[in-house]
Image (cartoon, rainbow, N blue to C red; front, side, top):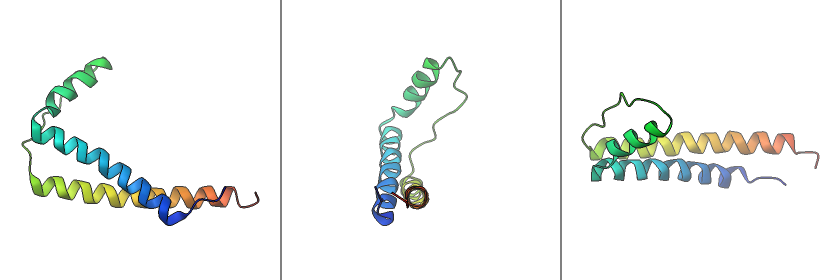
Length: 88
């Protein structure tokens, strides 16, 4: 099965950006610090991190950057997939 490189890249980019949008919403609503403490505690880890106050500009930058990184990762993934499956 051949993957469409552009569509795969967009899906990866949107997925990664969406996960970071959820994180920014957690920061904005004030539940991010609790979540970090809880999830790291499940892994038997102490939480050395402190969640900073919400910043709209930083949130937008994070979402845009993660979309770009996800897009590039999806593009590379699809290209490698197609290369490895070109004989099928």
